[in-house]
Length: 126
Image (cartoon, rainbow, N blue to C red):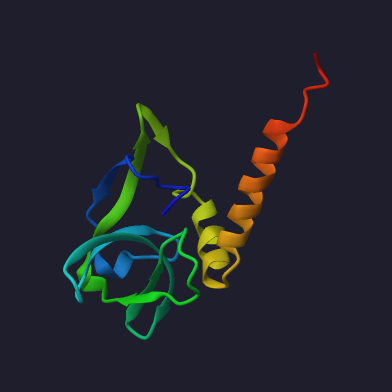
């Protein structure tokens, strides 16, 4: 789920009714195929199931999850001792759309490259 949730972040998962699972929500669920706990973003619906996808996953296809398998939604993310808000507010809708059409990862990679390039540039304000 990087960059919105990174390894080592502490997440708080709050219960959610299956009918309340909405587009853009970051949810925790158990994958029936392997009984692993997974955290992904809901990017759509297909019939009665949820389309979920990790924000940093390059593959264009999403997994289908039964709403009953959802344990809860990510209500809080803490990195170190600071609360992380990005990805859980209203921007979650845009993130879900970009993820669904396969543009989120390319945008994140470009933004990361631009940030690294800007850090390497000499500072003319000195």
